[in-house]
Image 1 (cartoon, rainbow, N blue to C red):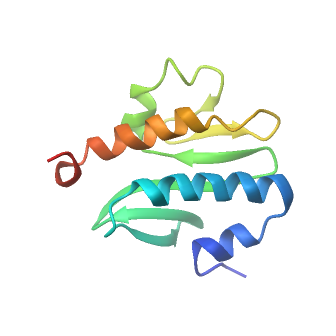
Image 2: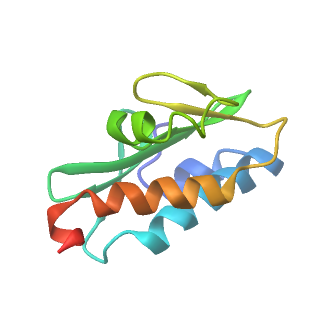
Image 3: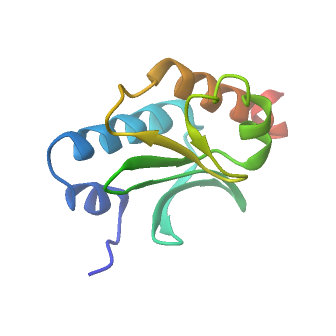
Length: 119
């Protein structure tokens, strides 16, 4: 079954993985503008502002995948050396504490890059 909402997506998980996804979700939700849209896109929880993708995240057996855009990953590359990254994703392993301060910094930086938010 494909979840129809971010809440349904998170509810598929149990225990620590569910809590980690919920933490990431709440961090994003409280930071984005009120008119940001929540959806499931590419089978992942997604936040968009108009047509602009802001953030995606996902759960796996090994990590939470956080997708703040390639520009954000490049900007924070020095801070991300302890995490697996790709051009689009940051892998936050379940075996390590969730880096909430770093996630918060990435969210804030990403939102500052948007003309409608930065103005």
